[in-house]
Amino acid sequence: MTIGQVAKRAEVNIETIRYYERQGLIPSPPRRESGYRQYSGGTVERVRFIKRAQELGFSLKEIAELLSLRVAPDISCSEVKRRAEAKITDIEEKIRTLQKMKEALARLASTCSGRGPTSECPILEALENEEEKDAKE
Amino acid sequence: MTIGQVAKRAEVNIETIRYYERQGLIPSPPRRESGYRQYSGGTVERVRFIKRAQELGFSLKEIAELLSLRVAPDISCSEVKRRAEAKITDIEEKIRTLQKMKEALARLASTCSGRGPTSECPILEALENEEEKDAKE
DNA sequence: CTTGACCCTGTACCATGGTACGGGGTTTAT
DNA sequence: ATAAACCCCGTACCATGGTACAGGGTCAAG
Image (cartoon, rainbow over all chains, first blue to last red; front, side, top):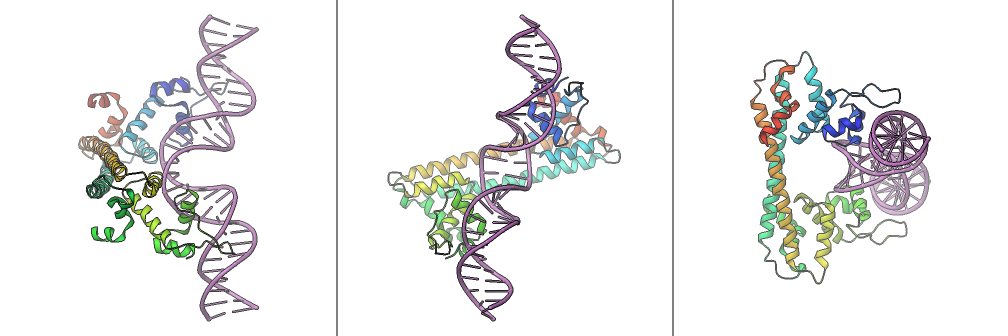
């Protein structure tokens, strides 16, 4: 298979395949005499693994590590589970941060009737004043 | 006030002040003969506004717009409120995405006893297999 | 044969929000 | 005077995950 075929089957950009190769996420395949890469079907599966793991919030670096774990002979499943659970914790933290932002914004928005000039907008005024921030903490 | 004093009082890096000036977020101040920037106290407040807005999830670009709105004579408070509410919507969407990720990860993690070699890890296997993904959608 | 699609490489670019230099001038306190 | 802190500018770099070229070679179908 050529790089274009792999990209098409894995539903990614050709450039992405080359990028992943450069980053070490997929191995450099053998070449034809022309220099064209010659892939087996395993690369499609590997790229799909990468994209699925990305969807779950893993960075490419973390994915590279997962891929290494997959073939490490002395590593146990528990390490994979630990990483999944660590990612869950990460995500929970992010959700908390976002919730705080949302609540602060909602409080601000509720102070504004939506009428009047911006020079007297309570939202903008709150962003300008330090007391407002301290009062929340 | 010098740039160092502004940075210290606003609790940001000197480089950040210069960056904000380059990005148009704060105005270029008058200079001494030496070339040193000479700030009034208003810049400290403005930088604090920027940082507070950032904490609420606004990008610098969005913040620049808020700062423009603040002094626009024909703009009403409702525009500011609209933007705050749009940001809330953004954040809610991000939370939903993160929730989905978390749930998918939790499901995966629950399939793994934490025992056994990684070559037989249900988490990794799920990431490898397309059927698993389709079954969820 | 011809042409269009495909492939290669290396380098640069994008977004975002900074941060770090190098090289040189200025200010301030001792 | 001296030394350290401070400031200036322009340019490059960082992280992350791509994406886009330019310039040139190869392949496959008509």
